[in-house]
Image (tube, rainbow, N blue to C red; front, side, top):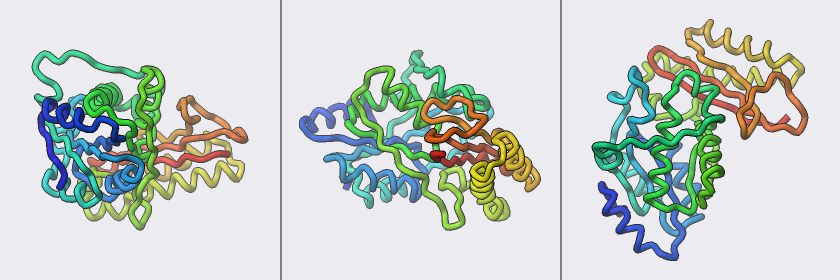
Length: 280
């Protein structure tokens, strides 16, 4: 059975007892699925203790976003975490993480600006603030993050580098449904009809990559992919190509460079994101 803590005091008391042990963290907002299970499976053999956090972080939601309706499933989350070998679960209240008078915010200024940063201006500051706080509380040696949220991964990577933090990141590849849809807690919002259409996001990523590799110009390949999604009822926010890890704009492919092909699109009221990383 995993130990479950709801307060900073109890978590820190537990952490003091782990002296000499290698600790890993899997930060989540709950509503766990098989993708989260893969994060636990990836980190479990590399550490002595695994801490999973379950906290829906209000600082990363804009005023018109889905904080209030974000799925919450504490009991099933605990069962999945325990089944994968999590030792400790930290599930604090909002007041525990952001007590009255809390006024500090941590911002990364470069990698957070493009892609999702354009459409969700408070998102990455909310992410870096809460992740830094969780790192401070848990003092992990290793932290597992999924590459479905690739921009988030590279923003956190830069924060760790800039602040000379000792935690190491463990990247975990995107986990997909059988039809290619990237697993996400927000997939629960999709209607049955939308769920049938949703895998087109991944298909268009692959089509765009194939066209670029075959010699089509980057701008044309991106434009055609965006138009194809929009033609099928999506409202595409971006379909973009960026260099990795700095996420600077890429308008042509150069050999031996690493790239991120990323998309964000609404299908009905559900915002879907996905990406492909590749080397040319």
